[in-house]
Image (cartoon, rainbow, N blue to C red; front, side, top):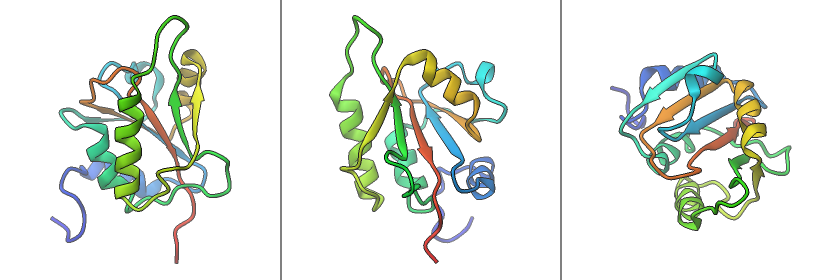
Length: 144
């Protein structure tokens, strides 16, 4: 165990966060996401909710300040609707972690989101059951 490292972060997830460079992206995917089909590095975080992972990751992970929206989420498919509580829970976790909870969140069409996921450094399959509960974080530069 390491001091200051939340115990919900597995060694595999910590390794991915450490190895990511500026501009690399990580996807925290809901439990239904087809990660193994799309990702080259898939990390399991079964049973863990995305807000809890955001709280654990974001104090260690600088968001990219050189882009308009360092956070992206899937938009609802036509005829469906987003649950505003999902984004609200994510924004609360982002704020609790000390990041800009009011910053813009880019919304990406479903199949474009899948294409974007293919380029992510890692896909973390969580235990999140919320519909459209996928979120991509773009890594920035560490404050030194």
